[in-house]
Image (cartoon, rainbow, N blue to C red; front, side):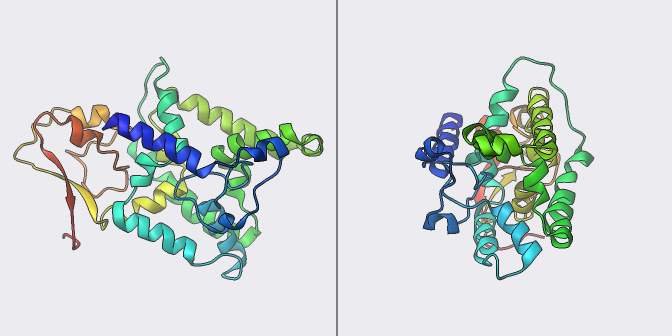
Length: 272
């Protein structure tokens, strides 16, 4: 299953960014597909991107109201979340894929306290909605988003001499944030997903009510720690709530459970 997941992550990375000619032109794709939201975290300003970033769209919605972005974006994310919760994070997010690859590099491996993971909800509420509403600026995209820096900020500055000359302190700050996040990925499992990603926070709200879920048979579970060890986000499904917003639905725990105590189930109603 892990090989299939890697193929899926690679496939979606190219699916979101097929317009490679944009790198030659040094411009951003402006076709009709740009009206459609991207399921994963992928910058719409990347020269190769053909879809709009959902977080960027939500910031514009918060800043300027319904005339600037359709409720289709929120409905689109809601449908995906209702089907599989954070399954996009585990199977179809290019930046999540990058974090998992960087973590494989030999380095001391550290843990992230659970309380720090709550920060992603603060980013979602305050930065994406509240601050965008009052400042009329997409500050998550401008300062924090590492995907935007890698996919759009750096390529566009390098490909356009005018942008290179205009790059100021804001770009330096954004680049510094990227370097810190990339360095943290050597030591922590998917640190951006777990602490700062508002898209993951949004999808995580649906984990409890999603149609496809994971279920632990408490009688079979021997609490061996395998699920925690193999989980890309250090989530112990045997100890924590199965419906937790931390789970990215990669199904590695289900595949590796020695007792077969974890099952993928389809739920038609909300459990109490």
